[in-house]
Each structure stands twice: as structure tokens, then as C-alpha cells.
Image (cartoon, rainbow, N blue to C red; front, top):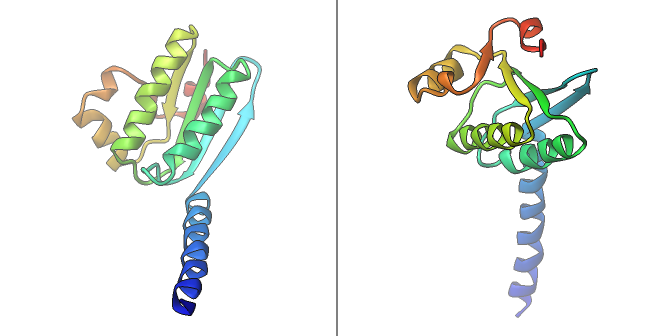
Length: 134
């Protein structure tokens, strides 16, 4: 029985480390401008980080920000859950009569968006200043 008692506390800290690790894998910076909100994502957008990104983005949208600029200059990788996040966010923004612009795509992410024809759905800008024009 003593072994089981010791095993349980060891499992709990490991779970907390994973939760903390997820927060350290992504940083979300938010800037509210006159007619849009800029969201800079630092880190990879994966199944491990997308829930935090969804939560923060929902808070931003719920605060009446319907024009969003996502700056992915410091994002090097997106998995399918990350792509799903952008598709879902675009739907939410369009329902609110807003717009979603994306800037700062690296070659890998740009190729991924192009491969699955998301370049036809999203407004993607090379120049961050152009992405901020609404």
C-alpha cells in the first residue's frame, strides 16, 4: 500500500509540469488598435497549445473586437488543430461582420495554407502594415 501512496503524488506533479509546459510553448500578445486587434503568436500552434489560443481569442472577440490581425512571424509550425482553429475563428468573425487577416507566414506555413487551398479563404499579407488596413 505504501508504494501506491507514493505513486499517486509522483503522477500528479508530472501532470502539472505538462500543463505548465503547454503554457511555455506559446505566448499570445494582444494589442488593441483603433479599428482592429492584433494578436501575435510566439510558438507553435498545435493540439497542445490551441486550447489556450482559442480561449484568449474568444476573450478578445467577446470584447467587441471583430477585426483581427494574426501575426505569425514568430510561429514556425502549425498542425491540423491549428488550421482548424483559424477556420473556426474566421467563421466566428464573419458571423460578427468582421474580418481576419494573417501576416508573417514562414515558407512552411505558407506552403501548408497553399496546399489545402486556405489561401483562397484567408486574407494573407506579406507586409504586416498592409494586414492592419481595414
